[in-house]
Length: 593
Image 1: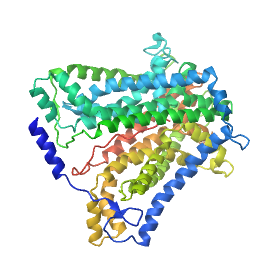
Image 2 (image 1 turned 90 degrees about the horizontal axis):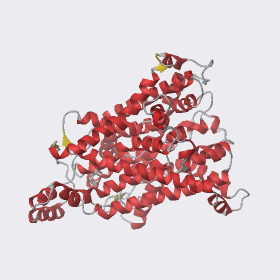
Image 3 (image 1 turned 135 degrees about the horizontal axis):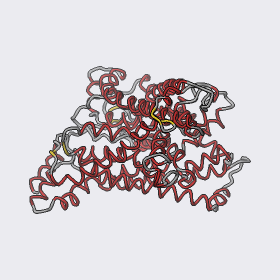
Image 4 (image 1 turned 45 degrees about the horizontal axis):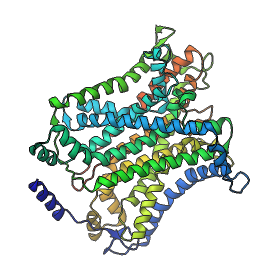
């Protein structure tokens, strides 16, 4: 123990001293570097202003307008709607169902994810990388596809049809765990594989059993990652839309689906505005609690980049068995059932469901073929990804600088928080807000309305993917480059550029997959002649007839394969970041739209 304390003391004494930026360009220059030029000032001003304008026009304006229409219908603020809406028994039933489902799914994800993180990140064995990929893929699948897969699993004729789980809370919770299990495994595993093992070794040398060493040494070190992952998973479960809309029915309605019912079907903007505010408060409380728990233990972590994975041991068999059952039973089974049922119609094996994807009219419910919708989805997702990467890169360049002044430091923190807001606001609110605010301008009739709406959703993912690499850069590298005569553009290209390129593949993958599967806002904005693939899948699954149902299953397979392939292809473009001064990279968050 003494040797370990001496080692930690020496690391604190000899760790690199980073020079904080400061200066006249909004604190974005070195404290003793040259004064910022007019070009630099303009560049940094645009890097701050353009993303704020984008977020203000395409997020804040629609959301605040919708809430304003509900809380101030006559131009005067009227908060009596809170008392009226919160007095309804259905409101509290929906809020309770949302909290129960999100809490149950989060607890199950954490309980299953910690053993999974041990097996997949601290142990080595043949096939481990393949299992990691299988665990990661569900996180990027569209919510409509996941809802369709579980519906095929639990509905009449499915393997679990006899349990009568269709439309129940149990089916919804299982689908939410399917979505977010991989997030917990990746987030906790990334931290676990970098913990210094000598503290556990010292505890074992002093006579602690493996269980006691894990409980008293490893688990407290993992609590920051566990708390952060749990808070994010709760957010994703509480705001789930597509999967609940397909699976839930009235027995598992959430705040998100209730907002959809109130706006799309009843035009009750007052009640929808109240529920939007309630949802935002719930999400903010969850994120605040998670951040408090993470910071409480963050200072006690000792991370390394050279901790090798150990071979499987006899004591790992329970965790290995639980992980194997989870992967096969929870992750692979629903997608396998989706594929199998897409190959059957009227009790016979057939490829008719896939052959009919190119047809319209007749007995099916489509105005355009599935392949036309798929092509439209790809075009929209590509445009949304370009917009999100452009805006997200500008945001990351600002957030990666460390201002010297306390006021500017707080401004940067606020800037960061502002661009995370789309993760905590209902996609339905955003989509309906677009209709209210942008219809007079004619933009809702433009093809660009969908890429812009989907880019709002994707920007936070891009920021969370690119930012860790930029923050890992030693500020002295930029200062040395500037001292040697490199201009601001050259510094960005030679110092920040390589780190951006390393993470750009993964960021593009998350943005593409998220945009391809976005359903909440798109369900309001997509035109009948130009629907996206998630809208088509939902329309087919919700229509009667064996042909529509079969085509819906087949289209769901196409959408799932496309989203997963795009994500994995883009992730392969990512190259490892430099080891020195690096920080653990958290898994980016994703909204189930």
